[in-house]
Image 1 (spheres, rainbow, N blue to C red):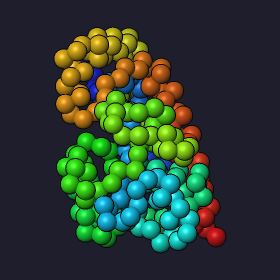
Image 2 (spheres, helix red, strand yellow; image 1 turned 90 degrees about the vertical axis):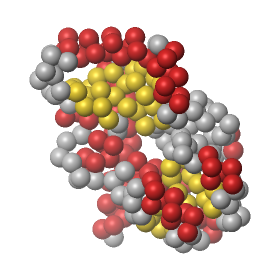
Image 3 (cartoon, one colour; image 1 turned 180 degrees about the vertical axis):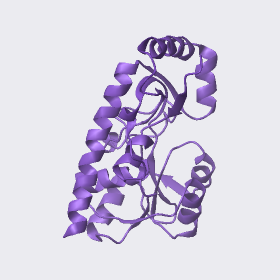
Image 4 (cartoon, rainbow, N blue to C red; image 1 turned 45 degrees about the vertical axis):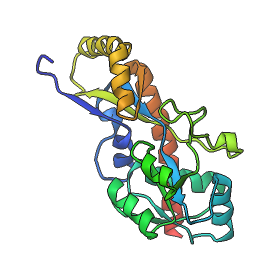
Length: 238
């Protein structure tokens, strides 16, 4: 890499910035190409809950505002997803920070929370056993890494959420030609069937976005997320 530093991460950078966990966002870096995505941040409920669909969940949330407990790790994408769902669907959950993925699973199994947001990979056994019900995916069309799971739109609920988008990020002073070289390498790698297979094995989806397209995607996500944070602050001050 000729001594240039490369960071590999996703829009957690934006979430961290907007919740003041970090002093910089995605644009604190030069954005490189995107190589992986995961659009499967779905909503899960207990198999015992009687909730079978996204419509059931929203109906119950409307009937009992603030009663349903949702596991949302503060400042992460799951937190922002619940903020967006609340804003657009006119519902209120009791957001609880239960910690990371393992803690979320334990909280839903133990009944500490009623609903969990999580990516699909790693939940298959719980779904197979009937412990969990997955209510759908927040995608425009079905996710390539969960093709059997219907979208919310298919169920008549117009709710989407941007996929996790993993990209390479560079220091601001990295020459543009270096970023372009990496983009060229990324384009080649992501078109290799072996790479695609490896990403599928990890439960994610391959993608390729140029540095320009990646930066545009992050700008759009930041705009969406910033509106959610502004709205939450306004509510908190009342």
